[in-house]
Length: 357
Image (cartoon, rainbow, N blue to C red; front, side, top):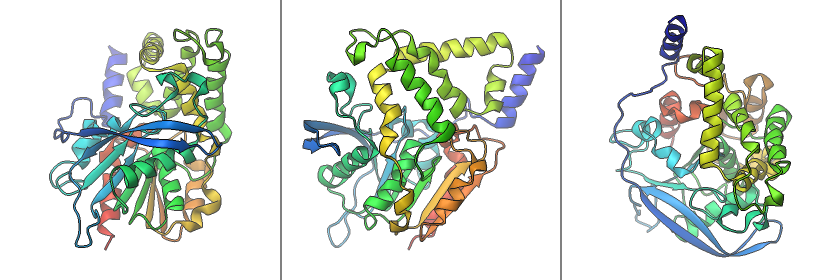
């Protein structure tokens, strides 16, 4: 009884919206763009690269015939574009009168290379699939936006977690293409320290799984899944995990559920590529190339991007029109996963959009 009461009190303190009503997400339109003879940065070429995407709203063309209301939204490492359709995001952002009202904006939400409906190792090539990096992912996104959808100007590029990292890259690679940038739950520097070490633990568990067979398995390797809860430990908040698992029995049950969910949803090769695809990520040296106003938002209880490192504020200052905000831990923040709760960071998005001419 006491444990249950503590759990309820903690969940109330966190204000985690378990069943909160939210406006229904607008109906998405899904599509695929095929990039022919896509060349990866290591020189490998795929004759056809499929890039899956979702759009909400419709493009508006100004007097010059160019689309003037496009917004690009980029998802995190283990998710797809559909993450943005969850009520905690879509219900806060895309409805009537909301910051990214789909009646006003043309929202472009791709599945990143290697994920979801886009081309990936599990489609058949396994580890013969090119070893892509974030530079390849961003190049593919750019092809989709420009060649696939005919958009050469973006009002906003925003992304969460891995998508936030790629938002910094968009600002550097295509500095004249957007009006504003909003990276959320990310740092503009190469993955290192603890952030690399926990990822390496998972990737080594895949490579050393006896069922992995160098990536040529016929059925999913059985052993590496036991390390996936590391992602939960790093990405969630200690307060919420304690609230959800306040006893030894409940914590063990939570661990078992995470492993079972991973077995249902993840392919070993895809996951390996996800974890290792940041090998080429290091925007720090070129931050001065970013021209658009940039507002970076992180969270004080994020253990993947811990604020005590001081990296975000130091490096955001290198962006000519850059600003960094670290949201204090409190009601509604749930560690790194706070990026899934748009109501926490929506005020900063509204502020950024209001500042634009």
